[in-house]
Structure formats: structure tokens, C-alpha cells
Amino acid sequence: MALGGQYSFLAEKSFDPLRPPVSSFMSIVQGSHHEGPMEMDYENEKITIILSKADWKNYLDVRGQKLAEGILHASIVFPALIDAIHTMRRGDGEYEGMGWYGRLEAILEAKSLQDNDPFEVAQRILENPISRSFKSVEALSDDTYNDETYD
Image (cartoon, rainbow, N blue to C red):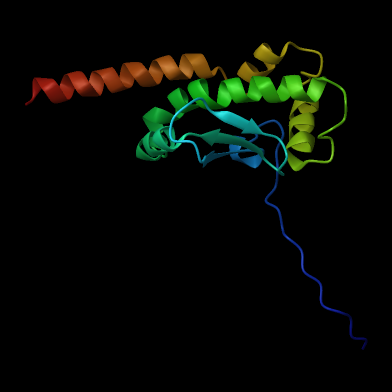
């Protein structure tokens, strides 16, 4: 019997490019600015969406709520994904070695979206975020209406 050296590796969960979780290539974090627009960072393994401290606080209040998911996808993830696709297609190869780039490339290939418009691509990847956002707003409105009716 032989002895080998010690090795370690990160076992990654199975990635299905046809049903990719957004968290597999994108993350949302708090920035250092108190207020202002969100920012994008492509220099990490995941695309990083940076929110102001004020927006981060509001994000934490609704994150994880099923009804908020569609709204968050439409207002934060959707525009970020469009920008990321434009960044990929610039063709300068600056981010080709990043994990997010490979994941997004696999998604585009699996869904045959390589030549489609970034606006359309982002909608297809996120499964029509605007429609889901309207459904979420409608459900929230119904809940608010029902809460006011019984008070």
C-alpha cells in the first residue's frame, strides 16, 4: 500500500446551465457608499452587484421573501445581467478566466442564445423577470388590500 500526499478540493454542486440559479454566477453585497446607484464588479469569480448602505438595508428587509424575488430580479439582477452580457461580448477577453464568465457562457450555449440581443437573453435566463415582477406586485397589493379590509 502506498501513501499519497494530502489533497483538498472544493466539491461544486451540479450546475445545470438550462436551469441555472442566479447565485451560481452573481452575488449582491453592501458597498461603502451611503446612498447612490448600484455598481458592478466583474473582477471576482461571481459578478458582484454592489448596493449602497441604504439600499442594502432595504434589500435585507425583503431578501428571501418569495413575493419579493420577482421584483428583485427585475430591478437589480436583470439590468446587471444585461450589462454582464454586453461586457462579455465586447470581445477583449478581459474576463474569460473568471468563473462567472464560464457559467454565463455555458448558459448561453445550452439555451442557444449566443447570437441573441443581451436584453432578450437576460429575460430568457431570468424567465421573464418583468412578468414575474408584476405578479409579485399584484400579490403584494392583494395582501395589503386584505390586511386593510380586516383591520
